[in-house]
Structure formats: C-alpha cells, structure tokens
Length: 252
Image (cartoon, rainbow, N blue to C red; front, side, top):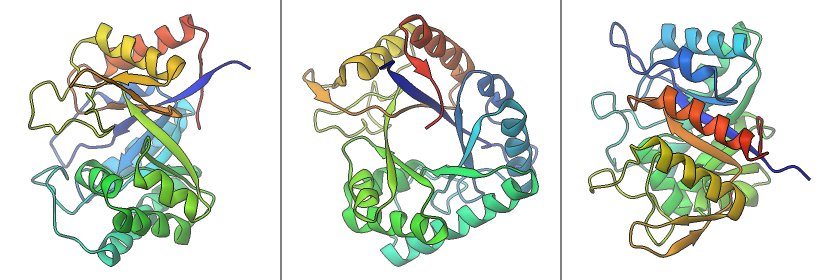
C-alpha cells in the first residue's frame, strides 16, 4: 500500500487592511486548509475569500477556531471553562460553514488554533468540549489534534474520526508536546531541516525531541503555519520531497 499524508496549513489570518501570509501561493501546494474564524484572526471578508480560493484549487476546507484574542493572535492562555470552549468552538464552526455553504463547499474538518489547541491537547475536559462541539455540529467532520494528545483520544471516545497531526515547522519536547514558542528553537526555520523531519515522521513515525530522545508519533496530516515568512517555500519543498519519496499527498 502506498504511504500517504495530508499537507495542511493555517490560512485566512489577515484582518481588515492588515495582510498576513501568502495564502494563494501556499494553496498551490497543500491539500487542506484551516481557516481562521474571526476570534483569533480573520474577518468575514477574509473568511469568504479564503474559502473561495481553496475551492478554486480543490483544497479541502476546515474550521480553525481559536480563543477570542485578536491582539494576542489566539496564542495567549485564557481561563476558560469547558462549557465556554464548547460554545465558542460551535459558534466559529457555524460562522465558517455559512461561507462554505455560500461557495458550494463542504467543511471537511475542524482544528483548534494556538493556545486552545495546546490547552485541549493537555486537558481532557477541554478536549472533550472541543470534540462535543464538533459532534454537535456535524459528527461526520474530522477533528484534527496533536498526535498522541487528549484531543485525539476524546474525539475517538465520542465516535468522531480523529486525525493525528504533526508539525513541519515546530520542535517537540520529549513528552510529545510542542516546544513553547517562548523557548529558543521552538520554530524550525530551515527548509531542509523541516523537510527531513517531515519525511522521518511520515516514513518512520519518529521525531527527534529538543532534549534529544526520539518521540513516537502518528502522522495523518502535516501542518505548516501560514504566518511564517517562508510558508509557501516550505510547503512546495516538502510536497516535492514527499512525492520524490513515493509518499502520496492527498486530503484526509
């Protein structure tokens, strides 16, 4: 059986006159996109434009709900309850669904953003709240979560299809968590290093931690961050390397 992987990117993160990322260039290389839903980034015009661009490229569209923190780009931890998380995730999925429906696109997945993603990965109650919101909206949606995390486990416990995500441009701790962005080396900024890491994760199910030991992971989808300056170059190089290694790049 030919190995395969989804290549996803967080997009639609511009806001008003402020532009972030080269979304059109990235869309030429990825197979899925996670579209900001207005809480941590994005606005109604950006959401609609991003869905339209993805549809024109045949790229699968997913909701990327975050914490209500535009100033902090959704990367600051907030004290939120499971009920609040469930409601805010459901709200944001519904918002993106409106634009997807208007463009004749079916939502394929949901992936929390930033601090919400990391909080739910570590906290089973918050993970369950995210999964419950996805189930309540549409149990056919795929919930994307950090490989080995509570997000994946709680999604499966509620009968959802879960996709285990790995990161091309982030470093890992030996416990399997992503290195906090406040620490040196949290971002992988070299294209060749990122590409080699992706190939190893996909082919061997291992990633080297910041502390040294290998971490076993499951890779259903590989994420790139659209807000990093070289996102488009990373995406194209990684896709080409996967294809050269006879790994099929396809949506979830």
